Every structure is written in structure tokens, then in C-alpha cells.
Image 1 (cartoon, rainbow, N blue to C red):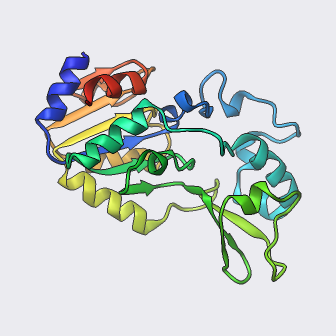
Image 2: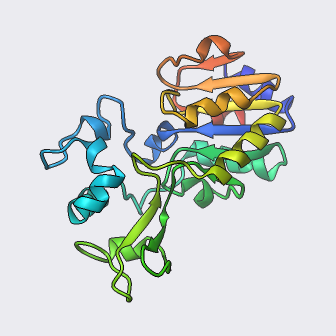
Length: 239
């Protein structure tokens, strides 16, 4: 199976990678929906994780939102794993045109990838809701309670919360890359979160590869399906 992936990569010139939370689990960042994922863990409150990570909760209970956000979504010490590094090598070799990710951890950029489309934003970008000033991650990790700008405004992470729309410019760029790709490698996602999962339908190229430990609803459409760790699969296929 690994040889099949290697052969597809060697036969491709315009690869797009679409990834989810499973790409970063090998870096020690938990996913959301698996047995040990964030959604199965106690939030320390009477609210479900999906409620805490919603726009309305951020507005109503900002301090409680940040207590959860700092404890469960920030992993500044995480490092890129074999999957991130393999994708960066593919881009440097001129075979991969874009990484489309649902992750907010910045590990693709840390590995060296340059054209990364972050569907759900990034923990490394934050802005004041009043004056628009921009801040890095340290504005959140270096504060307690509600992080505030010098102007007094509340700082909000540039991450897409429940009840918020995905950035239309990022979505449009993702569709452009998918439409032009000859190969789409999907990894570390169950493809159940929409509208992001629907992006796969924009691909009309030759090779669809799915790498995920658990089966997905798209497995029957793929030319190659690997139910294994994505770092292992990509690391073995990319020199």
C-alpha cells in the first residue's frame, strides 16, 4: 500500500493535501471526535465543548471561554511530525501546490510549508475587537482572564468558532487549487465537518487518496485508501 502511494506521488505534478485533526495527533495534539478526543473530555463546566467553542459563548462568557481555550486548544510546544515534514518536502520539490487544513496549530508552517490555507484560522493570529490591532499567541498565553488590548478592547483569536462562517476568500482559494489538482491526498479527517468536507467535491483530478485510521464516507470514491497513521504513510512514501 505504501508503494502505491509512492507511485501516485511520483506520477503527480499538482498535488493538493487536505488535512484534519488527525494530522496533528502524532505531535501530541488531541483530535476532537475520537474516544480520547476533546469532545469526550470534561470541560470543567456544565457546558459541552461545542457550546464553549461557540461565538455566542465567547460573547457571553468570555473569561470562561478563555479558561477552556488556553487549557485545551493551545499547544505551543508541539512540533511538526513526519506528515508535516513530508508535505513540506513535496512542496519544496514542486509537486504539491497547496495544503488545505482544518487545523489551527500552525504546524504545517513550522515544518516549512508555505502555501497553507487555514480553513479554521490560526491560534497564532489574534486581534482587538475594538481597534483591530494584531497580536501573536503570546498575547493569549501571557495573560490571564480576558486578554485585552492597550485600548481596552477584548482580544479575540482568529479561529472559526461554532456559529461563525469560514473565510470566503480562503474557501475560494481552496476550490481553485482543488480544481487544478491532478492528485488529492486527504488525511487525518473523517470528512464529516461541513462546509469544509464538501471541498473534496471540487476535485476532479486523476488520483484521490484517503489516509485515515478509521473509514470515511468517501472511501468508496478513492483510488487508494490507507487506514493507518498519516505520518507513517506519508513518511514512507516521500523521500
